[in-house]
Length: 342
Image 1 (cartoon, rainbow, N blue to C red):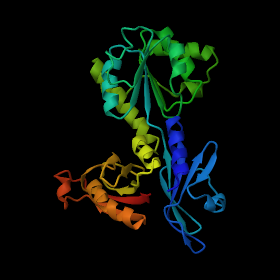
Image 2 (cartoon, rainbow, N blue to C red):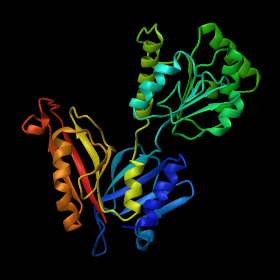
Image 3 (cartoon, rainbow, N blue to C red):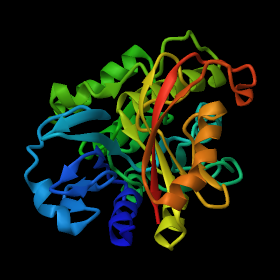
Image 4 (cartoon, helix red, strand yellow):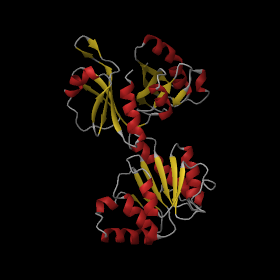
């Protein structure tokens, strides 16, 4: 295991960056088996897990591709994916909609930050599930939060002037999602003011307004559900996998792990390509590939994979034949890579 390689990945994710990760599923370089070799692609350059293979990776004609995907070049099969940092949800406004939305989003594995300029609306007692609360004018508070392609912004302030301030700051920097609540009249007013400030239409078109999926919600809780549903829709549409940072830290500290990654799925299955789970020798799990029989079988295989030091690709069928299914029959199949990291 190259600790420098995995440390670089952890550094990128902790900074809120997204990276591309390419893994060799099957292939030879000369007489050498290069199965499970990896390349990390960042904005600062490419980093192979084995530096001696830098020339091999340098010959590959990378072009535009969707993620995640299976790809072949020169007789070598790759799994290509995009990894993102833990998604950050920044709620601009700590009012009656933000309260249930923070609760729901924390259950959906978002790291929640609440911004408001009123101390009674931005405090840890009101939002105990929030990673942090910032009480400051919105323009100042937005300078203290991450602006990356893993940042999700929901603007639910108490007035259109504050909405405009938030949108003006957010639109100038990276984000995964930006939604603003409000009546049609208020939305039109804010957008016209931003046009006058010089924001082009394609930039304004990235704002989700009206916000949320159209489920007919009326109460704060129902509106929060519609917004949360849209956040999930956008997150999965980005085709980005994630890697549990706690497990990654244990790996870098020297604890051997098996990295399980879903490569393909057919039919119905809980998780899709790119879903990841780290498995420690003691059976500690970091992340999930969907639970049920597939996950149980993967965990059962982990000691063998660690012992041999050889990666395996296995196909699991979720047809109810395993007692771990416990009646939750999906009927699909998943192909999983089990990669020993030690």
